[in-house]
Amino acid sequence: MRLPTNQIASLVTGLLCSSLALAKPQPNIILILADDLGFTDTAPYGSEIKTPTLSKLANDGIRFTNYHTAASCAPSRAMLLTGVDSHRNGVPNIPEAIPPEQKIHANYQGTLGHNVVTVATLLGNAGYHTYMAGKWHLGQTPELLPGQRGFERSVAMADTGSDNWEQKPYIPIYEKANWFEDDIETNLPADFYSSRFLVDKTIEYIDSNLADAKPFFVYLPFQAVHIPVQAPQEFTDRYMGVYDQGWSELRQQRRSKAIELGIIGPDTPMQAMHTTDDWDSLSADQRRYQSKRMAVYSGMVEAMDFHIGRLVEYLKTTQQLDNTIFIFTSDNGSEPGGDPDPESAGVRFFLGLMDYDTDYDNLGLKGSWNSLGPSFASAAASPLAYYKFYAGEGGLRVPLIISGEPLAVAKPITNAFSYVTDITPTILELAGVTAASANGAEAKDSVKLESIIGRSLLPLVSAEKNRVYSSEDTIGYEIGGNAALFQGDYKITYNRGPVGDNQWRLFDISQDPGETNDLATAMPDKFAAMQQHYEKYTQSNGVLPVPEGYDQIRQVFVNGMLQRFGTQLTIAGIVVFLLLAFGITTLVRRIRKP
Image 1 (cartoon, rainbow, N blue to C red):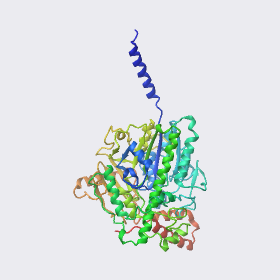
Image 2 (cartoon, rainbow, N blue to C red; image 1 turned 135 degrees about the vertical axis):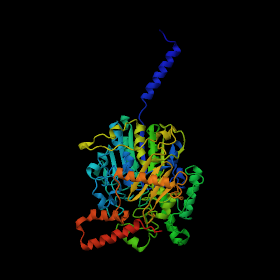
Image 3 (cartoon, rainbow, N blue to C red; image 1 turned 120 degrees about the horizontal axis):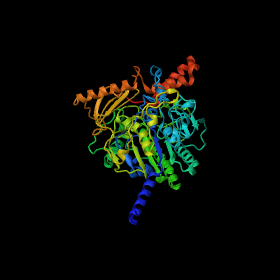
Image 4 (cartoon, rainbow, N blue to C red; image 1 turned 90 degrees about the horizontal axis):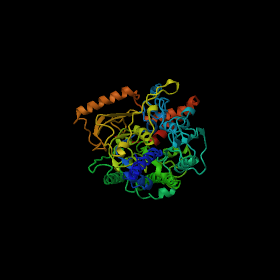
């Protein structure tokens, strides 16, 4: 039987289309992680900071307005790369902040456990090149470095943070800034600036295997805008004078712009944090200094965006852009650290011991130590309450942009709840890679691997679904005694003092992301049920209570200094150690009590 010509043509066309669909290349995936970036610190989320690269990615992709992460860096990174809760993957807190009472437990080591596999391992096993350039902070012993956790090539800073201009620690718990390339200790170039260097390395790694046409996965965790906040002068200059009206005015401006962009609802209430100082009570010199601190911060954000733009341009030039997907987010909310009076004699003394200064003219440049402080940190998180370390929305809710030509983005913004453990399953689905090998499989030495708990966000990208979590699903969270549980549009939260009030509260974060209206009394049954869910979460995930009087920042310096000096501490050394720990703790977090 001979088919008509038109039917044969249709059949051939159909077979060709099917073959092309089957042969569709796996996309390149670039996961970009900012450090301590606030909810409204980029233009797509309401900022006055110029971020043209991120703005284009947002305009071409989808913005998530209800995405949550952990309120501290290492737990976020561990969940981001594994899809497993931080109390199960070995990183329930940064290792420097874990008290001895918790450290004796296997799941409280603060380093990525061998009971989880990273998304890089799974992608590498599926034929991807895997590259990493930036802050690691998930362990620095040989078996914990990126090369042993799935990354083919890597340059990694292993600490909580470090200087952005030179190879130098930013706090005295470190003897040196610990940088590794391909798991071997390395030295930074003389012309080092963190954002430029990390993108240079990313381009170098991608370019080294360009000829084989295999897809790549890049993990690009910037140092920006972690303390010390530093930026090239030309970027800082663009924001000089922009913040002369102060932090409260900026917080209002950011809220208004976020409403205009559809990031938050038109009636979103907002309240001032009690840790925000009165701008008008400052002297003219103090206002001038504080304004420049924020200008440097904004310059650092724009510099990061500029270098992301260089990466995008490289991909375009090498004809890879059309097959690349970008995921951009932050590890937690804005950082409140910083003394209200950085030029005081005490601050200058302690910083001088580390060869830093706080001079106005040098602010943001080599040798300067700069930070935001709690007042501008609240503006960076506008209109949300709290900031880094705390379980308020300002600590947990951050930007998330997913963009790229291979995606079929159906709408520009989604307000559906999403969580940091969703990133790994999203990446795996984008790559067409199964997560089965990470779900209940056996690892080395018969260690049972933890299952991925996150959910792919692609149904939100395509608008196939309005939610990936139902109104009955719960997500628990805890770090350092600050805690939360999400269920549908609701959240219960507990924030410890001195900034928090040590009380459980209930909020509808879909209508009230600023957490201004506590519903615990109005909805007692809901409140009680969610507290029961939180108790189940702690029991099933091995969440431990913090010791009485626990202070995370103080613990960081006690642990860090003991690790650095150990038994070498004489009586005189102990006195110096305690004075130094007290002074630097004051420097990093001097926040007024309510």
